[in-house]
Length: 74
Image 1 (tube, rainbow, N blue to C red):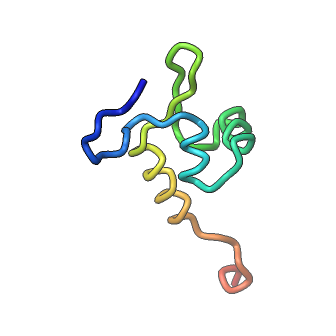
Image 2: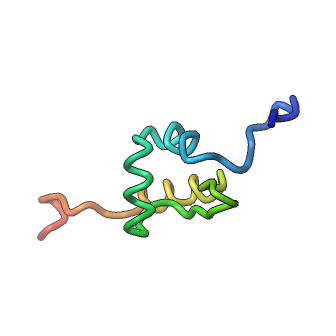
């Protein structure tokens, strides 16, 4: 199925496309999905799909988490 040439990127991404966007291996996305810790995803038939907005929201949430660095442990 080809995308119309509208200049927009598709709103639904396959697991491979999501992995490219996140710069993570597909196996990592599968593992996160198994643990329930990764970005929101859903099944459509046999395919696992990700909404682009959900991926960006998940990235923003990860960016907002405070890491336990030595400076923060006082």
